[in-house]
Length: 241
Image (cartoon, rainbow, N blue to C red):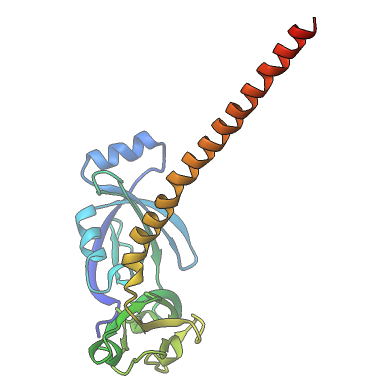
């Protein structure tokens, strides 16, 4: 299991924090605007190479990767990506936020949960696996951040639920997510889920037409019954006159 502490280097150049036009100018130069803060130091506006950032985000440890952030003035510090923005249509990086990291202080991070093994309820009972929790929040030193946490589901059968308390724990990692939070379970394949919508639609549609037609006939018959009754009354009044 790889940890988030990787030997990566991200070079950055200081920039003047300004308007959207300034940010566009940075992007036209092939860089993206960024901000770095933390470790008791003032926030700093910088620009970085989006290709290097994307390489970090696409690595096994992803945004939990801790790397060296190097500035032209010689400043170098450990950092990690805490926020990033993509252009919605083209999918290109627009901006990132970086945080300076102190290797001797614990961090709170979210790491993905990976299901491992084939559940007995799937293999022997024909059920399907459902994962309800895909990330857990943990607290640990930067060097101990796992890239993911394995969840062994091989013993899961119908009626059993794998919870956060069942995940592998260690003295180096403290779980923040509620221990009773369900992670995964085996559920049955409900055939009616596929058949019901068509059947319900057919049942609902079938009586709908006769009811409308019947209602129309009743109104017509009532109107027809009232109309002939009115004519004799008028005729009788004429005869009396």
